[in-house]
Image (cartoon, rainbow, N blue to C red; front, top):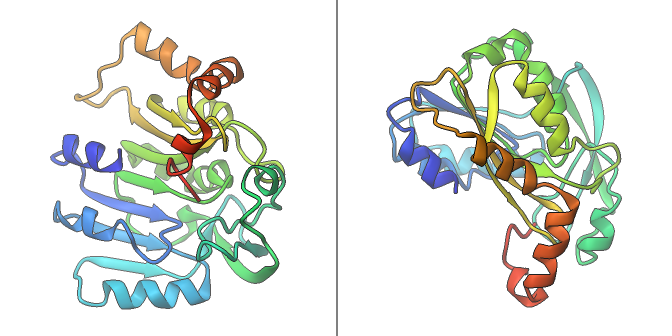
Amino acid sequence: MLDYFLENFSKEINGIIHVGAHSGQEVLKYKAYDKKIILFEPQKSIYKELLKNVASLQEVQCYNIGLGSIKKKSTLFKSNENEGKSSSVLTPELHLKVQPNISFTDSEEIKIERFDSLEVETLNFVTLDVQGFELEVLKGFGEELKKVEFIFTEINTRYLYKNNALVSDIDKYLEKFGFFRIFTNVDCFNYFGDAFYIKETNKLYSQNTLNKIKNKLYISNLFLHFKKLSYPRRLTKSLLRK
């Protein structure tokens, strides 16, 4: 769905900030629209891969740090079986049960900075893939969040990691800045998914009351329970797999 939103809002997007960029799998999608790109990836080994993958591209800035609401050093719990894609500064909890094939036996120390403390341009499309740390990253934008128009983020409906942000927490915080969630897709077996937020003041914003109700429904435990009953487990293995 990231492709869909990039395409539909391409004329409104002045650039993309991707937090938790991993090795840059989405960069070519971003470059297709000739936008400036800023990437953050805290894992040292993955960051080296990222630099290699974007070396030939212009208008791409990379930073080997994590983002959060407090400047500090933190332990990153690294996932072993999926090239670090599930790595988080939060301790894995339910994640160990719903995806027992992924373990977290390694760790590394990373630096975390507030976005608004960096001399980095605030672009208006933000992508977040930070394994439950989304709310802390958003808080670290401070007043710079007022310059953002679009947010595509991973969301959680359960505590996959200790004290991770739930989608309802993100909703509540972003509403203060005039954002509303207009798209929601949650894996009913693994309890995480994606969401897209847009500023209500954006001229391309269109959201009626029915759609607002539907997006609230899509994260409810009752809806996810019935969704689970309607889909065989084997059909969901490829959905949002991490």
